[in-house]
Length: 211
Image (cartoon, rainbow, N blue to C red; front, side, top):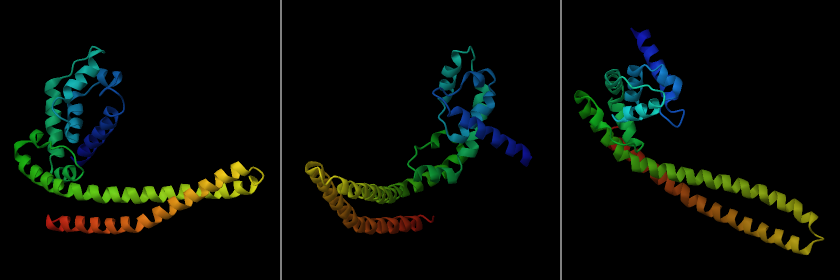
């Protein structure tokens, strides 16, 4: 039984990659050889909305293929059982995903929605931490680019001594780069302080909701 489940999960994973690989939801070969129950299962495990079948129908219409709606819906219902687990609800809310509670089976809705709402509480804290980390990483990359350019200017300055205008332009750029690097260095301390505060706030929120 376990091996069968693993094969089904593997097949669903391969289908997910296929469905997301092009402009349409399905290509010609996928339409002509479609296992609509498996396609529905894959959509269900991703929490795809019920109208996803309409997109598949549009993709396959030009090949003269109509979806097997009953098989698709049965597969999707099975896939939603896998998707509508509390941990997925929490992760969806924490990453800012939409609320798919309405698609979940009745017996799974309450737990999924509860965890989704907890995740939504964490989402703004995650956003704040992520934005600051991205800013610090971007500044680090900028300093690297500035240092590389400064090294090139230093070498060129020695060669440009016979061209006063070029020498002056390079010197002006050199000073501007030094000033920009210093400004980034001054801001770095404030950003790191803000990041530490944001990380503490996130940790406090996680403790508050028991995560």
